Image 1 (cartoon, rainbow, N blue to C red):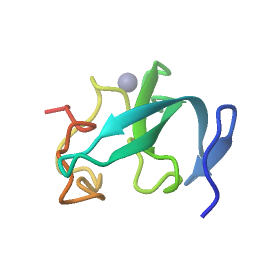
Image 2 (spheres, rainbow, N blue to C red):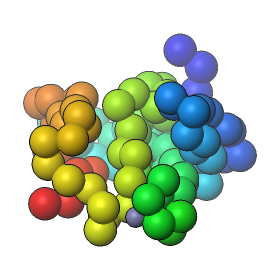
Image 3 (tube, protein in one colour):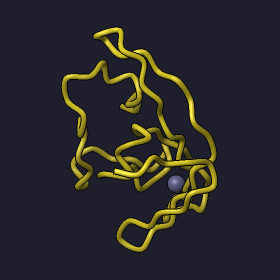
Image 4 (cartoon, rainbow, N blue to C red):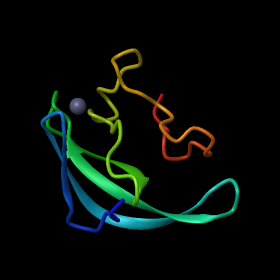
Length: 92
Ligand SMILES: [Zn+2]
């Protein structure tokens, strides 16, 4: 799969995401991977928020809303990369 680079734009179900950065991340198995930082706007309040995925993954089940409007039970699939350390997912 193509690597995500800064400035890349992707859409998911009509919502637009822009890659605003790439950062190194050490996994539990000590391998260092790169994470793409995606920015989008919450469809409920318009506030910008970011989330991270592997640069080789593209956006797969991305966050759709800002931290305030994220709600458990509303069709947001967590742990798309199960087996990781989950550090990219801190919302509760
Ligand atoms: Zn919001």
